[in-house]
Length: 432
Image (tube, rainbow, N blue to C red):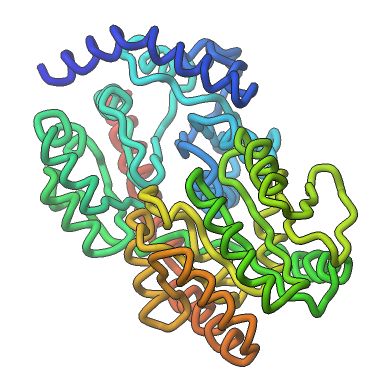
């Protein structure tokens, strides 16, 4: 009954969702395209025993990349279907996989759209990355006898409290999942308390530790440093949100007093903010270069605006110190493992509930430093600029955490193997 009421409300608010899409398209034109896909209207093609992987946006797509590549190697006879919800996620899928996967936007969680999508794609399993759970997608997929696996699953205390408030709809949804493969024991326990069946919950660790680094990255990053000036101190404010750019610029002003040739690389999380962040940098009086314009970056340039997509690791590799955004404001923080894997000291604000266990493990090892304000951020960056040995020690500590936690991907793949085998057995019995 609860899900029917939810579906009715979803139908009623759909016009407002479309108006929001229109508003977002005003800021980011990519949102204006491919609306019909969101209602499962798209040209279909024959797919062979497809595995459907859903990753909502850029972060989940990057995290899913090693999984998708492993599935392609493990099941070369199967098609991989990848869905996202955002244009930036879509761009990442296309950049990473091209035509080797079938990619469309995920259907809105309306019964008609979900059933239409299932009829067209006919998946043999659905793998949902992290926390992107939708009641109708889970219900109709599971009702079709298709295993639904929540992979690399995490549930923060904040989200768990939200699930408790809507337990009447969350519990049936969680119980319809074939497997919840949680990142850690705390996440697993929160899923159980929210209503998941104990037997369906397993712990694999986080597959975010299992990403690989392009062997050519070091050379490319070094080439950038040579263009900028090898000896100048460089720090990066990565994946920043509104409310973090100005503090980063204020920090840089303080740093320039002691290191006049210091360079800040600022990487806004959302492409629609590139223009406004550039204006912010310019109005603050900084000589600012744009990556997209291939501006000359001599030592007089104080800020580089990284207004391109897919180059974050390149910029991490070219910097000395990394501040990871989404953490000075209550957005939950972004992935600290990428700079950590590059042996960089990592700094984050206090709001890291999206990566809580990972951040605290990095912090306990000495590889991540928390700050609660722009003043403390300036102090920490300055300490790393001042002491190269300290900077290297903290970077090595961060890297050691990444190396020690690899292996979650193989454990997740084993769970997927099991569910696919069970599906084939059930399917074979139905045919007899």
